Length: 167
Image (cartoon, rainbow, N blue to C red):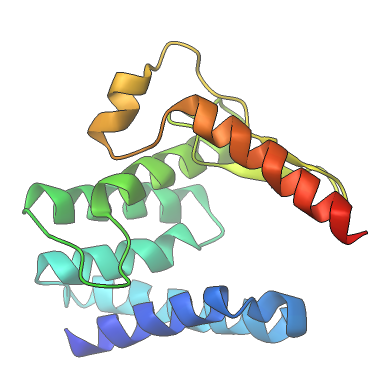
């Protein structure tokens, strides 16, 4: 569905251009509008293709509730199970299924499985890799196209170093 691709592209553009840094209220408003539209399309049973499921999953991943993240996980997995190959500029559906699962767990105060989620404890504070379930292996991560846990830890260190250099 062309509308879902357009919504997805707008979502990614806002993030690529870091709209939240220029106008956080507009960023939140646009995310809310996209989420409401996706939920309406789901209710109307308008998602048909694997691409539709991937595009909806990304918007749901940016939702605000556990149920949004769980639905994002389900839809990204569905896109992957149907063999969807991401087009240029699109996210990998396997990785997105892992990230949505991690975000759902994080929203419930549980450890994430794959190590895709980071947070700051305060807006000006350092990045932290959110708690990760130690029983999940890098081999399991690789099956979902998630880099090894050491890569996530290095990203945290490099991001904090880069932010400190800006100060």
